[in-house]
Length: 264
Image (cartoon, rainbow, N blue to C red; front, side, top):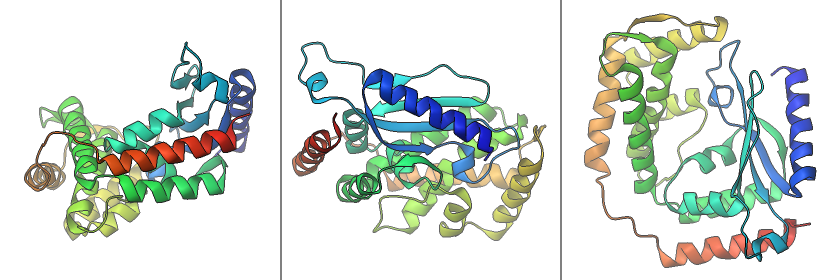
């Protein structure tokens, strides 16, 4: 983490808080640096959750539920309103769960993060989380190496991470939240040793080179990805999305409590 870049991120967050009159109780790194497989030239992907003043939520003219800032070189800073984050959580979107678990923080209210993470464990539907990772992984597989020929090797991780998360969920039937940190995830999902060796070699190369380059996708890795997607389609079948009324009520109570506590 470049201290000068971190300082720029912190300054931008301060500007956002002032200009938009929002509290930012969670601001973290969400990209490859937080996932544990950065390159020397990886972007800084700061993501944050914000809370607007109470009167904004009571207005006839609702504000946007996102705050976006221009991409500036390797700096990418964008955030979600707390309400948007909660709605997506109830739908099984794993992004906010990953934000809450990120080990790289630019600014975090520890009580907010703990209470939000506790809520996530209570209300998230593991089947919906699995379907999120399955749709994400299949899309990445299709976009970045659908023809199985020469591929940009760093793109392999975009499908590998969802595949490993799905395997982790299948191997931990009592859990709903997979680790965000990819090396931890890989260890916890008990991937075959041959696959782990190939992945670790790719990660080591990615850590020291700006461009991992292109080449044939290692066949064992491709087989691992496709097998995990196939097994997960069976283990987590598509069903009508019905949100538990109790979960909705808990999320609503959390939302109202945080608005009262954090609005200014």
